[in-house]
Image 1 (cartoon, rainbow, N blue to C red):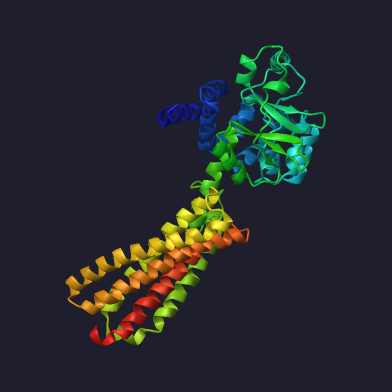
Image 2 (image 1 turned 90 degrees about the vertical axis):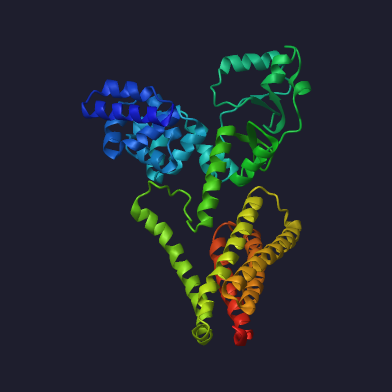
Length: 449
């Protein structure tokens, strides 16, 4: 459904709720797809949400919680009675239910778990950190014995009647629940009913462990183009499965986090709709840090006050050097952060990336430096001013590219997010070094300026 249709339905829901015509509101709400319901519900506002929520059935409420953002889902869960929340969580996929419980207070989560009928499917998932493969997996999957036949496997599927969340693979485990193979639905369909699973399964299974970072697990799924990814514990026993919809969510979450951190916003959960107080608390500290780096650059300039007073034209062009250095450094920073996220830079080959980017920085610096230097010479008629700008740009763009490459690699090596504080450090270096190079070279050629 397109945005206009959603907005029209949303207005219909609002009008029905204001008129206390709850049946009409529910009918309009059900016309939306689950993802569109979540968007419409979020746009209703707190007051109307509290009116609509008690009117929704258990299944619709479960679908809503699965589609809402984590913070919004936790708020909705907080408005449900413990008994109703338990029923809703039982209706949800185990991994989604675990996510909601993880965002509640320990006391509230314990009360809901005590009322749930299928708590045993959710409790193991709560033992893992949120941003690991274990925290991402679901326990909704189907296992087979290697001694089953293809016909028996089909009968198992018919008996279980798996819903659409169950992936397209069946996992073959031994008596100790160790994963020894995998069978796709296609293999079952084309196999003879008498074929033994051991003979048609694929023993080469791509898997991850429960402790693996969720971004690394998502990269494994993307690399091998998998619809589902098994998760094993340290003993090789099958613990759960990561499905393709979780892959999309992780990649979106990690991309958002990296973009925000490159812009010095540390909290990836912030959105344009977050409260002003929350946005200020999460964003202001980084602006203070940027202020300190800007003051350091100003301190560098202060050492050349006499020179600038004598050659005022330098004040016009010093920002060009710092700005171009910042742009070059940001380009390298963005490319390296992305390459690290995709696993494209092996630790033992990092020096090659530094050398390559350094070469790129020199070539870019020469091209930009000559162009700017020549332009300034034609503009101001001073060859030495153009020469100073040219040399300062070459030096600063080279250093900026090197710093933009090394900083995220170092942060990754010390187990920190490569995007975190990278742009602050790169900006601080490029501004300070740019001013220093430009004004130092100007000092050497002061008599000609």
